Amino acid sequence: MELREKVAGLVRAAAAPQTELYNGAGEGMSRAFELALTPAIIGGFGFLLDRWLGLVPVFTILFFLVAMAGLMARMYYAYDTKMKDHESASAWAPSAHPASGAGRALEGRE
Image 1 (tube, one colour):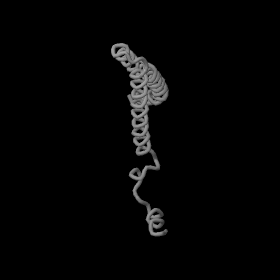
Image 2 (tube, rainbow, N blue to C red):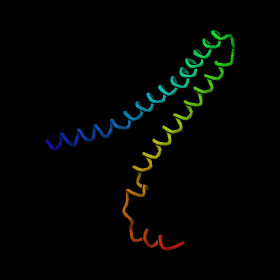
Image 3 (cartoon, one colour):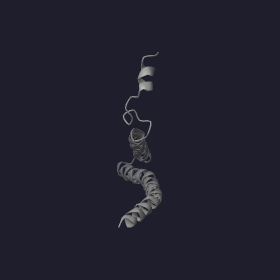
Image 4 (tube, one colour):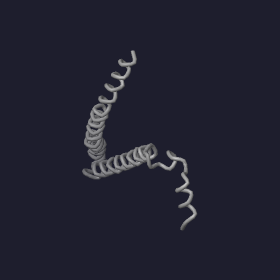
């Protein structure tokens, strides 16, 4: 029973990096579609509004630019949040290690 648990743990550990790789590829593909289709769809709505109002490129360009600005802001804040989470889980995170004697000695210096 103990050997079986060890083997199962090794198999899980070996499969984990591959799962993260596949998940990353899926995230990249979904972001690519999001970057390509969202401005096209929103710009298409702007084009329909332009045709209906008789203003040819005004709302098409405006809606496209607003969609791109929204996507860039969304991706920036998502990346920033993900990096802060990654940093807080790292070995050098301030809350991960209690203050050691060397750290307290350096705090007194300027």
